[in-house]
Image (cartoon, rainbow, N blue to C red):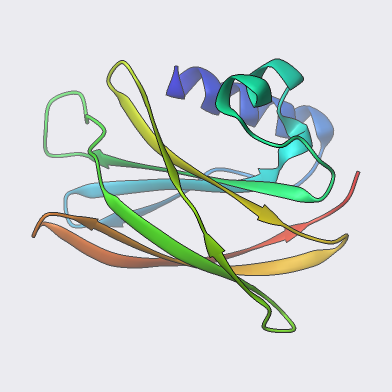
Length: 144
């Protein structure tokens, strides 16, 4: 289902012509996949299924960690926390929820934003003693 959600998000973004995309960072044997986009890109039924507020002023962050050293690159559970800061340095603590669907494991958090606002994300990800990293990225959000 994660791949279905990821495909649906990618298609929705592509059809809307907005420059959002899934991104990936490799740390050791792990691939960290992440994306941030406005929640209105989700269909109402997907948003309802995952308890996501669908609003022109709410973004979602989606993160999954895959172990590339294992056959099939399985998803791994992680400890995850993070903060978001806008350019005025207003800090928002991100509350990630773990979602499991079959073999897929991913983490979703919501973040409020205003039109044409760039938000910086700093996310700590840990998996036992094998992975302990900070993921940093920024995303510009627009109100539709």
